Image 1 (cartoon, helix red, strand yellow):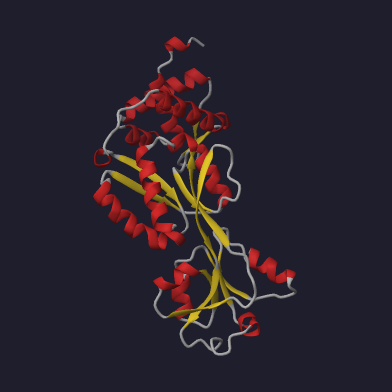
Image 2: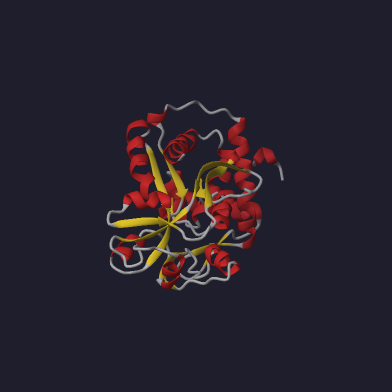
Length: 295
């Protein structure tokens, strides 16, 4: 291939097409017409001798070859962006969308102050909050560019990922005020009550259950939920118990918390982004706000 004939803008268009897997959405992201974006897709297909996007049932999907292009393409574009020093744009003039992957904890108590801060400091930054489905999925999303920032558990981040420790969190036993187990709370009372657990994958066995099994104990899981958001209301309306991160309790009236009757593993929460985004002013601004809110 003669690189002198290659239009770098075509690679930028391809990056958007592979991210969105949709010509219209890619066109909106690039501020181009749909016809111009379709023409760019045709040129990319000719360049790589592959369909790149193929039609499925009512949608489009990436070919295996297109999937293999995603990470190296983002790396190349990131290197080019760092090579060419762009003009510094003041924060209040930046117009950019950022995708943040995080669970409803800690979204529960960071989104309002985050948006209030951005409204004053960088009103042109728009956020898309993406659901958290596990640390492995969050790391993959950072690597392939489908998310920009992730708040997750990252004990050993992959090469290319920059992570900052936000907090070391522990669990407490949460229940409604007046719960019958509250008086003389004990291990026996805790194990006798049905528990609510949260799992983005619908799993009913957690590291807590593994630790209980090691101690020769077992609890009854009465309800599995996909996130923390629904837990407080269900606790208030029932005699179920739940292990919740300690920082959740102050945000819910009517709940009381007591220490777990056995030593249980907590977790460390990290803020992460890809190292190729280290010079992204908007991303670094949002990351700094989140670190200030959560540390």
